[in-house]
Length: 508
Image 1: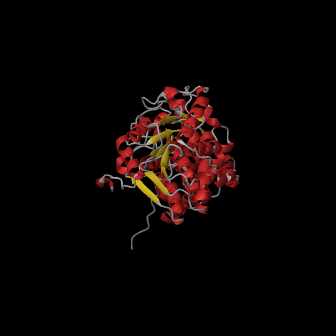
Image 2: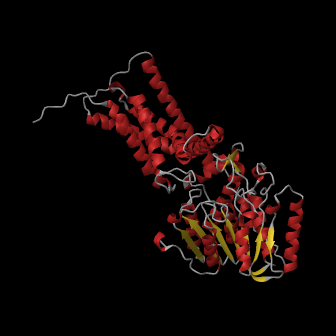
């Protein structure tokens, strides 16, 4: 029988093991939350990768374990739980900072403020909506590590706390941690229970006043453009009609995405027009100002999005025998809403609809929307490092308003509620899902598809493979992560009921 091992355990190594355990727990929680991470090492669009999540949590975990449990007399369950709480709280900004560094290579002092404010905004959003879950989970991991340490080294006796600061500080820290958990849990509970006032966004908002003729439709568009002429708009951002001078077999209405304008789909519209369709590109209110630093987007409402959707669908009745409504992101929600509520939309195709942001689990979407609606508006950069759009996008806003984003999410919740409760009215529906999209929740889009399918809708779901590495904006030709020719043909195929040709090597 071997002699017992009386060597003193190397507690320093436990900090590394603790960091590893916290990181593994964080990785395992990602699939459970419904959040999708697409990249192993680094995302070209600045989203969290598996590597940055692992490193950020591991480093934070090792640091707090070393600070709180670096000596034998400190191995207590409360300290283990406190370490887990602090790791959960501080991992958010650490992971996001590592993600930013891995994307850009450095913290450029000229953009430090904008990049830091972007990280802070994302941290606050996630902490107040999902922070309670991560703090509780990692607190349990911390206590499990303490129990494992005692089991591995049974000779480590928990000593009595010493008097003075050595006794007071840990108690104070534990109290603060407990208060933090209670605060986060309370914040989530309040936000989850706050009403979002979506009652007026349902079927009763689907008011139709269809154009009675081609001339009527054109007159309505001219009226819209007349109103827009009095606004300080970029000329390319006015509502646009490409017409063959008469009512044709098919008209396509396209709703642009948040912060963009009708110019986003100029190239798509030209392709559709060349196929013989009339094409109408309506401007969503609060978009298209000539001043790209405009604050107008903060005044966007879900009601105005529905109004422009209804008006465009009415106009389309006079432009084509078959009406196809489609849109990207926020415009995809409008297209989906029209498909749910308007029988005179012969086909509705929602492209990557922004039903929920990818960084928020689906179960926290209500709380996140309530937070954005009730907090002061903030203007956030799409790309805080460049503080600009890709070259050529001189018509889109480089920033979005959190209040405007909240209104988009408010409309998406109304759409999801209606889709769960009743069958859609449009005869044909389509959903275009981009598997590489790291901006929107793909599980939420799948949920919308399931609702429609359960009601027996004629629904086509097309999934663009992850291997294509396409960005969220699949329409604007100025996006460096896009492939307009390929995506446009997929859309045309969907409109014509033809199975799109996807790359076989990518799963097609």
